[in-house]
Amino acid sequence: MFDLTGQIALVTGGSQGIGRATALVLARAGADVAVMARSLDKCEAVAEEIRGLGRRALAVRGDLAVPAEITTGVAQVAAELGPIGILVNNAAITRDGLMLRLKREDWDAVIQTNLTGVFLTTQQVLPMMTKARRGRIINLTSVVAQAGNVGQVNYISAKAGVIGMTKAVAREYAARNVTANAVAPGYIETPMTAALGEAAREAMLAQVPLKRPGGDLDVAYAVAFLASDEAGYITGQVLNVNGGMYM
Image 1 (cartoon, helix red, strand yellow):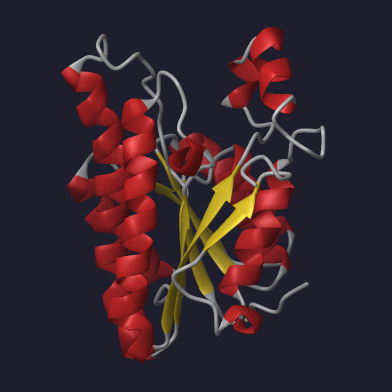
Image 2 (image 1 turned 180 degrees about the horizontal axis):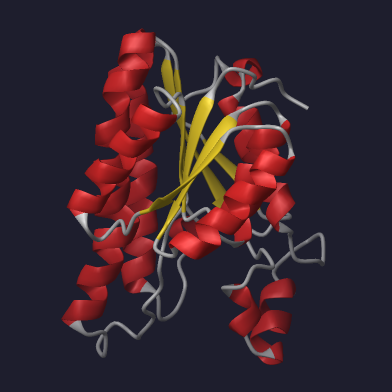
């Protein structure tokens, strides 16, 4: 396991699924972790798990569609845990619909949370990282941002934008020893994908050479690597965790 002792991590969308798994893996590696999501109760449950591992933890109520909550949440983490050195931008929503039927409000909602929210959270955290001359930004994107998918033009546009943002931040802040990378999961079994019907599940598995879905820990370990000193010479990259789905 990578050693993250002394690091303060913020994981958005950390109350369940990939976010929860990532928060716990970072804690097991030695980091103190703040968990931010719209449900404070769920965040607190994850924070309790982290405390059970002997690490400090903080539950933060934060909706990435509300800029003021991002500002307040990041400030709370810095005040109670310390300057953030690892940022995992994981929070995301879906509002699927075919291109010609997609409502403007569903486009705006997904872009606001999945792209603008990542921008604003990163903008709040970067001054701490540049001052410390050490930072790790890991943005969660998706295999569909690279391969496309029917009925997800808003989600795909946002997640593809996250890849571009990752590369821009990587170039801008490399001189300050701040790295920015993206992790692109494929078909991962989470509460979000649990709603898929059996036919949809089989169709997705047919595209995966390893012939199985991934687990949240598969993604969490990739994030932990990119957050570590061992990944200090990696920046501006997209790490695909998809069982060969996008090959």
